[in-house]
Length: 316
Figure 1 (cartoon, rainbow, N blue to C red):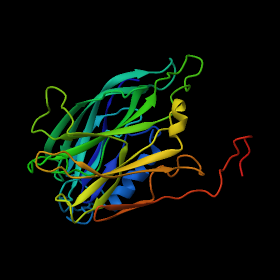
Figure 2 (cartoon, one colour):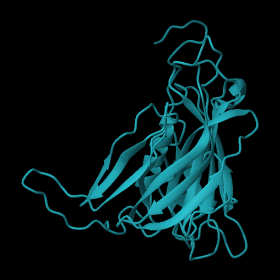
Figure 3 (tube, rainbow, N blue to C red):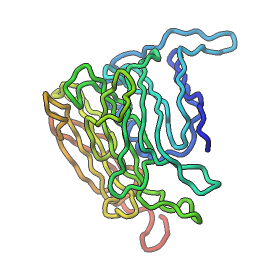
Figure 4 (spheres, rainbow, N blue to C red):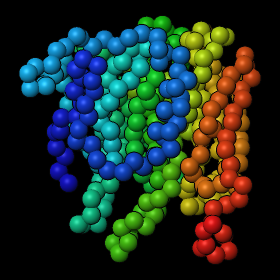
């Protein structure tokens, strides 16, 4: 498929329009996780948006304040919104590097090897750039998804208060690739890793070294009176790789507090819980997580018994 430029997001008044994005998400639970994290974000209600006051003309048309354009890529969201460290609504455009694979006649899937992110404030003005390379973890065949996490920070991953930090989450499929007779063989299974980067004044000429790396994806943002940043981040890791069936029964939540002077973010707690009995992946992250000082409590749901029998393909 030839890559093309497509109008993807327009901001006007208090309006964000998104068009030109299609394809099923590779990480359905990621969006559940992000929604839960944002609901708990201490920045969600802090500051009103920066949109200009607009009027609607006689035809019901609102003139956009600005327009952002990014390259359309199958399976991706190349543009969207972010929360600034002070809670303002910001935006991003994402350009990716990589190669496609698919037997001829099928829609291409991507193996992403890098990304270039531009972050804009509420007026559409660039505020920073990040450029990173994507390294495949052991056993991975491709990176099929790249996503900037919605919550930006300033001193969470290092103590430089002038920085703006962005977390990027990558989803990886196992090493098995499809064969010509079965184009979907071996493309299932996922696990995520997250890396944090400091935004730069211009797009870096070479890939940046991450400030922080962690297994899993952002699943919760918690208010914290003991954190200088005002919140802590929780990341949930799980694997559905076919060759890691022993990992499919559990997930691990790691909660970090911000970096100190000369020290990286530190792990407050690590919780590993089972996902069974259950339906597999619909609740791969905790329903909610609360923080009391340095004590972390998480709540998950389970089915009383499996939906389908393992002895026969009979569902209840």
